[in-house]
Image 1: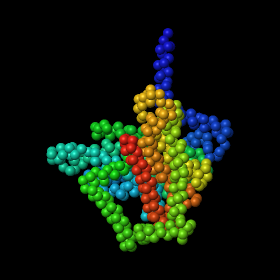
Image 2: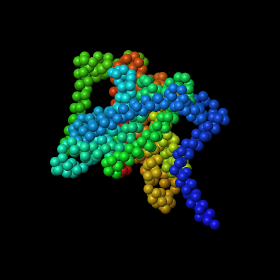
Image 3: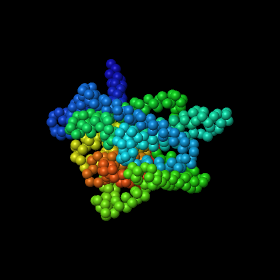
Image 4: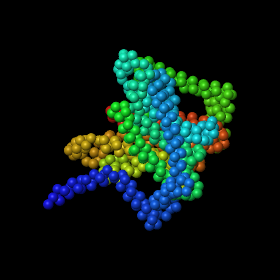
Length: 270
Length: 278
């Protein structure tokens, strides 16, 4: 009796679901098509493996034998975390200093302006000269790459703190330390969140690139390049897949979670 | 958006004390160069590890002259890099602008295309270089493809966002005045897309520039800044390493300045500010 009413509702709900998961569905459809084309032998290029072979490569790398890809991923994430942490601390400190002291900002300005378009990769030969090619070079490349957007975010955040807030603090006899801790750092941090995200993007690019060029120890980038020498195409694609998954996870899971925590913690919604 | 904060430092200051910020900036650069030269000439650090600015000037004159091998190497490398960059970038613009506009105007196309843009956004260009090397062979083709891919992604994203953000009322108004598709495109879509397009072009150029230098170091066979800097690093030709680092920074700065100037002029002309979105 009611299909005329129920049908549109059902159709709407289906459309909503399809729209929400459209990215996933489109990606899956593409992968399915790729599998069909390669499986049917329409595309016979040794450099393009079937998705099933890539997944098998991913499984092998993560769970079988020496767990090459698994440990490579751990090492990459370790370098990323260390470099990013230093970049956040250093960039935020410099940014807050520059935001509070305009002369310091003026002194730093031209250096930052030249640094922005300098590909972090270019510093690798110089760093290797000073430090030999090892972990330190990769981590420093990440730092050099990620500190810029974080610095700029902290600078802007500190500038946007209202002077009145500081006057109130001072009128109540607050120490410089509590001024910093209660007003300046939270004020700067809220504006820094987008730049933290950009910084992570830069750090992520830098860590993969630096690994490939420095070629020291283990890492996803190194695994991909090593696989190329043995023409192990499945592992190469598996490494890229791993990088894509981690990149998407960083951007869609880690940062939204961090934003929620921050907004809750500082009680500020921007 | 990134160094608008830095630019603001000079702006807000110079309103009160013209040239104070600029003066401090100049002084800080001079101080850095002097310190560098002092450290290099003092001999505390070996000249192999840290050549001074004067050494670099000498090296630049040598590499830019006919005596270097190949002759005029510096100019040749700059031209090779710029040719790859501009060639790839032009193709990226030709591809990305129609894709961005089409994805913004057609929902099915948007659903079909944007997931891939998101995936490419998450993959650093250098990670796919080994695969590209297999597909296209070592050499210019890989560099070119990397530039096209890395430049395309931000341009598509910005143009798509910009056109999507157009108020529907403009379309309705245009249509109620009997504007044809061409008129809507010319008078509604294009003006709205210009400012985000310029922001996207700047981002795309920045990404492409970085990836190109890195890719060159791995795949180029015939010169280019990234190629020579890593070549020099294998021969411990440290003066060339430092020189090329400085050249890359200055060239990157010049490219960025061109785009920023275009963006500022357009933003003023159209009476809007570029979206600060990344």
